[in-house]
Length: 150
Ligand code: HEC
Image (cartoon, rainbow, N blue to C red; front, side):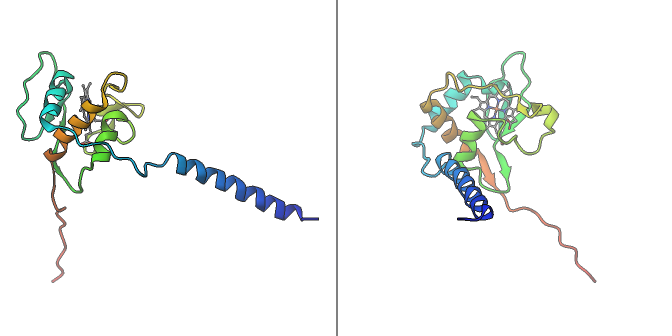
């Protein structure tokens, strides 16, 4: 007869394994979208009116009457803005809000102010947008101030 303690451990191990299986199923391992086309991405950016809310560093974009863009895309970052991060920022914007903005400016109750485009943006448009945006981010070394002791 096995002790109840042993059975409890077995049950706990099974429960843990169940959890890790689920993690495996939801893993992003193996995820890779095809490369897009940056020129088409620029056009997509304009006809989807991303410039209602966004400017892009070093990119002239026509203004849209009645809108004041307030979130800049591109520019200096301290680590590479990856393809995966940009895809996530577009199709799951609330997952991680853009750095450098007050939360109440860019979100409400943790939900990004950005529109949800998932219902009508094609995968081609998504990959083109990311291909267009990615090179606008440039990685700079963080500037540390070391205190020099006399
Ligand atoms: C109604 C306003 C609005 C529109 C339109 C909009 N966005 Fe956004 N977007 C935001 C806000 C606010 C943020 C910052 C909060 C966040 O990270 O979701 C943001 C963040 C982003 C980020 C992450 C920026 C970073 O540096 O982390 C990307 C990339 C982005 N938007 C791309 C797009 C694209 C592409 C479109 C058009 C298909 C678009 N946005 C349309 C409001 C908007």
